[in-house]
Amino acid sequence: MSHLNLSAVLEHPARLTPERVAITHGGQQITYRELNAKAGQVAGGLHALGIRAGDHVALSCPNVPWFPIAYFGILKAGAAVVPINVLLKPREIAYHLKDSDAKAYLAFEGTPEFPLATMAKVASVEARCPHFIVMPRDPSSPPADDLAIGAIMRDPPAFVSPRRDPHDTAVILYTSGTTGHPKGAELTHANMVTNAITSHDMFAPAFSGGGQVVTLITLPLFHSTAQTAQMNAALYGGFRLVLHSRFDPAAVVDTFAREQVGLWIGVPTMYWALLQHARSGAAVGNAAASLRVCASGGAPLPVEVLRDFERTFGVRVLEGYGLSETSPVVAFNQLQRPSKPGTVGLPIFGVDVRCIDEHDNPLPPGEHGEVVVRGPNVMKGYFERPEATAEAMRGGWFRTGDIGQFDADGYLSIVDRKKDMILRGGFNVYPREIEEVLMTHPAVALSAVVGLPDERLGEEIKAYVVLRAGATVTAEELIAWCKEQMASFKYPRSIEFRESLPLTATGKVLKRELR
Image (cartoon, rainbow, N blue to C red; front, side):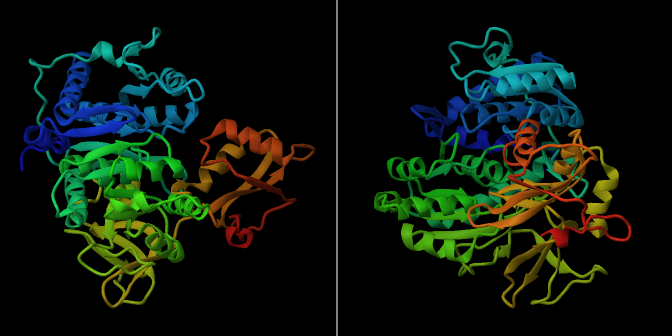
């Protein structure tokens, strides 16, 4: 292939089935023809602003139609998309803009309760991003003080999307490592297209009866799973995408029935919440009637939750595994084979997975080792971090930092984590980042953050803090301060003050003892 653009997953169905509905959100419906045309208008507008092939354009947007419109518009312009978590605060957003060298920033206006564009503009000014563009809640009344996306959108008869090589960067997804500083994983057009097609093909056998498949997206679209395994995979297959801006169990059950949803992907906390909703006496019979398959990722799904959900909703749940650096899907329990609850299934098409020992030797079934991956899904590297890239890609295999094992049938289980990462409600939380923020508080001398088991969220965040001599602050005051400094899924929910922390001989905190 000499030319490939991820936008093809939209352009192809727009040619085949232009009048088929692509997006449903609230009372709004957008056809494939309209979605593709709007994305083309955004591309033309970005080009007029000076955005060129290879530039990076940031995007902050919840699950509303603006996300796919802007996402594919950026791609059509030949630029790479930098999706930003909408829960981040200005300090965090500015870091992403500066680190990715974003040439433009498209941000959803938000709501009066959560003015996303206001925070985004503060970050844009701090990062000195050349272009800040607002996507309004109501396109008919754009914001007065900022450049609205409607002002740049234009029919692009004279604009032709630049050619992109399959190994050019399509998306930069930010993830953190042991340093706690977010790194941008550069995912190519080939990475993203192949993973989307493979994701579609995994679910396709459940829908052999014909008719348009409906998928409900409740995971945030800035998240790699929703982006690849749902949005891109579903558009490639000509599905109808029903977008929910936030997860609410009652609304999800109602949407299952009203929209005749056939496919849904969630994280374990969502499955837990839907079961709690059903146990409260809510009827789920009609909701379950159209469901053909559900999938779970982001964190281990407790076996009992999986089995209870399958019994309650009468649908098979497939658990899988992936990472931002792998586009993201690596392995999945697939429809053609029996599922094994507690495992993440078999490696997907074209992907090799091993469990290795400390000397990089592959281990036999039943033995624990670090999970390493190679295949068309693996990133080209971390943006402008050659040392981190070399460390993660030693020997041609991507080192996941997770500990796993294979069984005799080739099913992979993730049994532990090599890194200190906390998985809270499906979100990756990195202790080092929180510790560094805590250390900026004038009363804090030392801190250590760990994840503790939590029935609902999988893990909850706890901070151990040593105060500076003579300083006073309560746990409640420090937690409230943390809420102002970091995204809502990151701040510690409990703080314990200590006179000292357990240390190794070299001065490293013994987090194992704290846990």
